[in-house]
Length: 261
Image (cartoon, rainbow, N blue to C red; front, top):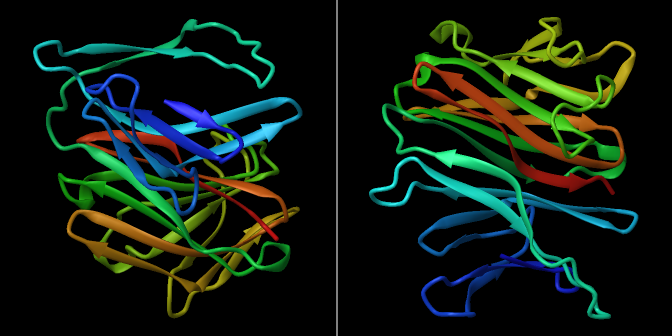
């Protein structure tokens, strides 16, 4: 892959044709998918941020074991070069991941920004989707998560963690809001989604307010789709999610990011 910081585009190598590129995509809302037969880069679920003299890419990439070599180990290697011709050379083995052929019914999460936030972070609607091909009742947890930090976990006072779980058909549209402490079992408030929903927020933490009446839950096949109306504090926000069940799990990929006006 190659990142163009001027054009703000990510390019994916065409492994079958030398130094050519499959194409390019923006990162974040409006991004597309790039696939070269080995990996698929999801532009809309990826993001880029900068701090001082550093650029950080958070890339959501699907990779698969190679035929006859499952499990396959992939290594993360990087190269950077500036306009003056100075470069790092290849930095090898920053991290590695081993991928095995999937068995059973996988669990996946996805999502994105449906309506961007208005002034002061109000009025946004954010979609979170969890799919368990073993069936919705098999999901044991589903956590939509907004954070002002691009890594997990965020600060206890700068996150908006929500929990949805299947209990029965009668309350499939109920969510509860975390008390703000990462990893704790404390939940401060709950609401149904849609008609009869209430506004819930964290006491002493004005980070986010969830508007139950303006939110919704729907179900399509083996997927739970939450469209959550959330007011957030001004700044840059990152969307994550996690879901798991008897079939497996998909924990904390970066789904999208946005900045309030």
